[in-house]
Image 1 (cartoon, chains in turn brown, purple):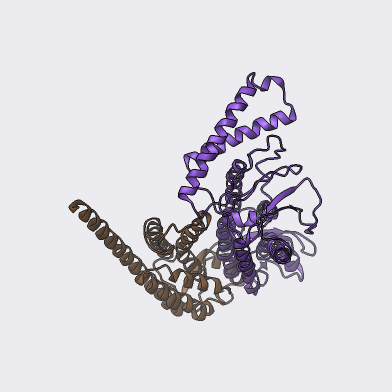
Image 2: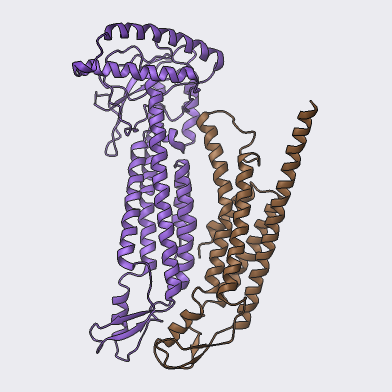
Length: 219
Length: 393
């Protein structure tokens, strides 16, 4: 699985982050990406093969599995990781754009292209809001799709071509539930980190602005 | 599947792209390669083993699976990624080759040319030939040599063989090829989008009715994970469209910037040569008029003066062109001679004003770029002693 690029991307983002941003990168990296690759993938690896229904009718298992898992947990988890890391790209692009502009006009336009001020600060805040938004969207999606982060042991299914109501058994339900809760916990932690970073930045820059204006008034 | 080779190659391409090109590359890698690797391997690994048909007839399942999926989604996406990245890879090879040759060439020239200002013509050709011969040719561009101060820069510059940004690409004579690879990429993108629609539609159904031999009659076959596959199919459609839009944005970005740059160049070229060919079209960005790789473009500041001068020169060029080509009588105003006289006077005044302004504000800047002048004329673009501003004598 080629997560190498995501790893490089996150390390690149680290350069332009605040302190809390760096904690966020570490959390995503260690608690989410690493756990996903090392542990979670193997749990869900044979979910379809090990999904058994009490019937010999060909095709019934396929249909029942598809009905109960329209999108598998592990895919949603992977999608969430990708979508949540992507808004940081906006900041990287903005810095690249600034450097491009400096080269274009061939003089120093910014004190330091990577410094969080003006437009770059806006981009950073937008990326924070987007990240939080994506986290919340995915959490809600998980909740809606799987009835509140539960993984049942037994499900009953009566879709064509199953001839009657059939018992189907999910493999490793407890383990999957534990890791689902872990996913939810790290998501919430990341949301908290993002929100605190957001409020910290807004607070800091509004104080700065206020002080500037206050000094100007005095003069 | 090991994607590391392709990702490394793409990172190299990163160094030779414009700003929008870099965004396209990142989107390609993050959204397409990672998604295909993530989704492809895990969703489709059991697509044949879990493809179940309601029959015991041996061979029927194989035949029906083949009828259902002549080309698997994952293979299609992988093929798409490789083909869409290929023009960039070829451009990279060409760019590196060309830069290496320019470095050799500039080093060879440094030994034989004199310290004073000289000018020579450099032939610009396409992909097929990059050989240097000083014959006259329809597409020739003046290459202005710089004095000793700049030569030192040239020595250092070959060390950094990468270039990025629209301006550098133009300077190094790669604009044409860059645009070609951009067009190729866009064409591939569109072809694959259309092909994906005709092959797979927008949905993966959960049941497939099959009646090929040796299946005894119409039988139901069931596909594994159809909903998940549908969702991934739609996601990949979205990502393809996003890449297509980025390609279009890059084309616009190049096009508009090139128009602006070429207008910038026209302003400088327009000087005394009253009659010269003006083969200006907005989409011949090609060629670097031949500044060496070392020289960075230093742009004149856009002031009202510059704009006025630009407009004036444009007018003059138009008039010159009309004169040369002998356009219809009705287009030429009756008092053309008077107009031209007035324009000449105004031009001289403007020249002096701009010179004074430049010397005041930009003592060490603005080396203008030359435009693509006509081949038959040697435009008297000369450099003054300090080498920073050009003086149109």
